[in-house]
Amino acid sequence: MLHTPPWVRFHDAGRLHFRWDDAVLSARHLGSDTQANAVFRAAQRLEPRARLALAIALTEWIVWRFEGLHSRREPGAFLEAAWCATADPRYLRSFELLRAEWRGPVEGPLWCALTHLGHAMSRGVDFPRHLFDALVYLTGLAMHVQPSAGPLMAWLPLVLDRLVLVYPVTPEDPLVADLFASDSAARLGPWVPREVFDLAIPFDGNTGRAFLEGVLATARWEDNPFLATPAELRAARFAGKPYELVRLTTSR
Image 1 (tube, helix red, strand yellow):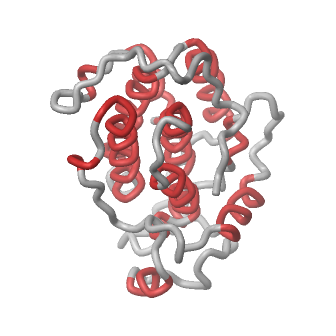
Image 2 (cartoon, one colour):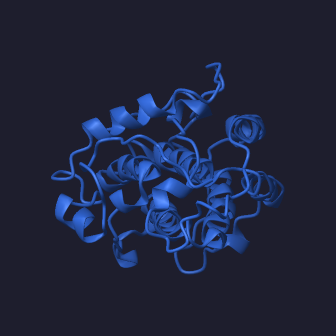
Image 3 (cartoon, helix red, strand yellow):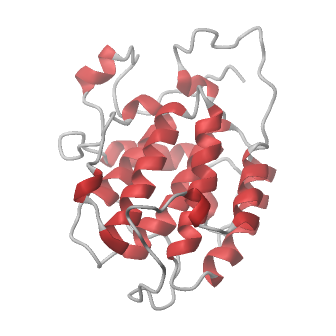
């Protein structure tokens, strides 16, 4: 199971000072238009796998912000499954968290974050608009729930610059394109590790495989309800051995 990354920092995390209404909260209530627009513009310049990783990183600012304030296991398990899904989106099971069971200023934002990220991970490769919409929403939600926006606002523009530098989008080669969407993992671009978001670590884009190998090796679908079973992966036309990282072949 993952732990709080060093690049996620909070001041007075136990203070719930933000407004929350389970009935009316939506993206237009979150504000943070400047940051959300910056994320949207940067995401358009990134390889798809880097967009997915950025969405997870923003969700981590939400999930870890509430650590110790609830007893639910789902947020941590979902983050693990989401990182596995950056290797192949089929690793993430289709799921629905019942809204009525996630209420209030702690579990409400967690439900919103997990639901929007899950939608982005499952549909964002073939329908990028879903991923862009999720990135905008998750940016606003992350900003909204922070006890102090300073650490997140200091981190975000620098990490966007890094991602654009390391994972610039490349034109799709029509001669090798995955025309029938049979292998979404091959269309995502280079591997993206979690540590790319740690600005304290020099990064050149060549260490993504080691991270994904590690997270896949420690993932246990038997214990994580968000991870697909081997039988489900076979039904989804998954080739190779589940939860082992294959050699990256790309149609980009």
